[in-house]
Image (cartoon, rainbow, N blue to C red):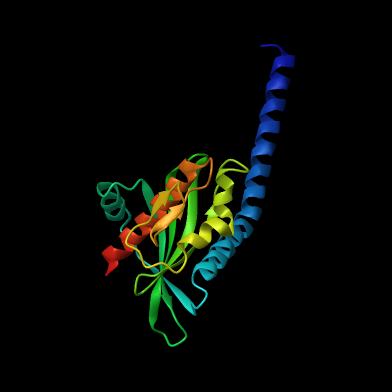
Length: 197
């Protein structure tokens, strides 16, 4: 190896080392603000689906058991988090779940959903969705999400012909896969809530 090659190799090693150290420093600096922002977004979503909540308490999930139960019931969904909701009097008012459906057109769709103690769905609020603009992203619009609100249903189904019953959701035109994923996720959440009681 020539002296020039050795110098170049050492230079590249130093540049790589410095770049790696800088990336590590940037990661450490941004890790907490990013986590805080994600937590703030979750809390906003929780309040959006359970406006009457005074406080939330995490329910410990046995993740493997939950995954097996959902899968055996036909759901390709992950329940990421379950929060017990308390009202101002300290009574349990219901639950808020963070649900991820893995069958969206653009990938995973994650949302929070609120369900009262008597089984009424308060609504859903998206945490992460990357569907097609102008089509699947319409799932985040109130015209779609409000269809889930204030319904006491065991399971929803979507229709392309206009909803005529409480348990029916109007499909988003041109985004049946997105509609199906959201409805499936909500149904998985309802199924899971039914196992808690």
